[in-house]
Length: 145
Image (cartoon, rainbow, N blue to C red):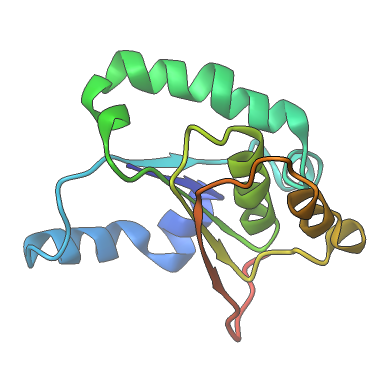
């Protein structure tokens, strides 16, 4: 299962659904659930994305229970990925830290780890119990606002 934050950007600008369809038709990926979470507006993205605990609670307390009801087998997946671009790359890392049992992998594409004087890096370093989450970090030449 993969949860894409900035769902509208992954769908409309990155072309994730076409990429997934192509990989699936070639047999290069296993059957999986892909969830695209979009923000209400550009203004709400700036509030909800940078390490915002109510958003992490939304993932934990609303999205996952809904997924458990709608797609029970999806949450039994061995790998559960959360992915984000720029600010939502930071959000993906933060959500994985706040909900450590939910995700096994984080994809942060040009994640805004510089935000708030790199606060999240210090936060990860001070955790008593380090998460077993695998991180895939990428910095490209284009940034999607």
